[in-house]
Length: 413
Ligand code: FAD
Image 1 (cartoon, helix red, strand yellow):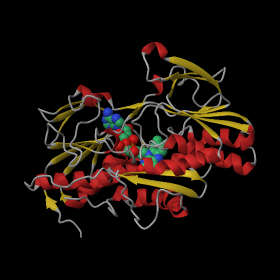
Image 2 (tube, rainbow, N blue to C red):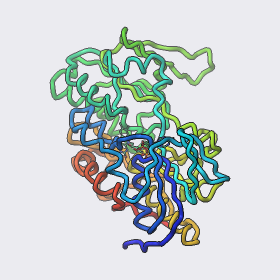
Image 3 (spheres, rainbow, N blue to C red):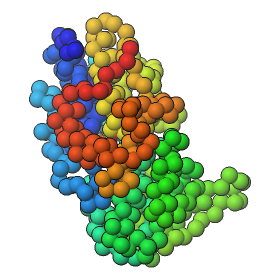
Image 4 (tube, rainbow, N blue to C red):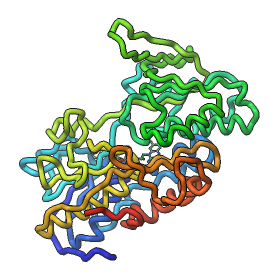
């Protein structure tokens, strides 16, 4: 049913014009007429990041993952091309890098997260060179594919930092698509593949682990838990990992592994202004109620997407559901009603285990399985899930989610 539109002259400020920022604006405009909406976003371009894994596997055109920011911001919305450096939640205004102050009636924090390349010594100067790459950057995903294509033998390492990260499955997706290509080319036997994770499980939701473990075995990948990448020596092609053991400090050791190709996923953190403005919980993420997404201390502030402190998987799939909840709750507040729309923690990670097959991990809070198609066993790889990931979702993103189409994203009261 189409929501009834409310008239209002309220000022809504959205921090960030990424997936959740533009998505929430589109969903608010479906419900609220005449709201004065400003998006603060420094970048000229908007990205569809989930397809970068496919680009790294030679299966998607990188140019289809980027559009001009001005083309995705809905008409009638003001764009302030600047970065927020501070929020004053008591005086209800934000302050930008260029020194502008913008007041709001409702504030939506949608600024994503920060990729901390700087946390790995020596990494920044060698990224894109010496066989060191990452699908987490638009300009490097094609370099991943170049390395994969050219590799005939040697040592390949795929690293995963301490969680939380966005799309926690993406480090191993890079591994699967690379190995699948090498297998098809008949060179996999010449390549020694290592998956080095800071954590102790290949995936956080146990039901999906058996299928993933089968693929890791099939690709003969050595899985190394408690291996945290701390340094990269690009010229000597060495990756240095801290071995995190359970025992006392003295037992902490480092190990240097040689590589011909190194796919790095960096540690990730919340943008600093969230904590500096008093909006965070102890970990730096925006401290909102996990169901209503309303800030725990300031009722006019909401958050969506990767910047939230909520214990869901940080994915676009999560943001797609969250934007509807936030739009409904803001519309309710404008109407003088309490915010009762609830987010169930849904997130999804389509694990591209081989070209043409995906294990579609869909789950909510407390690892509860929340399959979109309950009749299919989505703990197993399927061709339909591949079609969703590689064909349907990229198209639906640009033409649907960014324009307020809310298929299968209904919020629960
Ligand atoms: P973003 O889309 O990153 O947008 C944040 C925006 O905020 C940016 O435009 C930024 O410029 C802006 N910003 C930052 N700081 C400020 C500031 N101070 N002031 C103003 N603006 C600011 N998700 C899935 O669901 N499925 C997948 O298969 C999947 N695969 C992925 C694979 C890779 C390699 C990567 C990198 C991500 C993947 N994701 C996937 C995750 C998904 O892309 C993110 O969860 C999603 O983009 C989050 O949206 P967001 O709006 O919170 O952040």
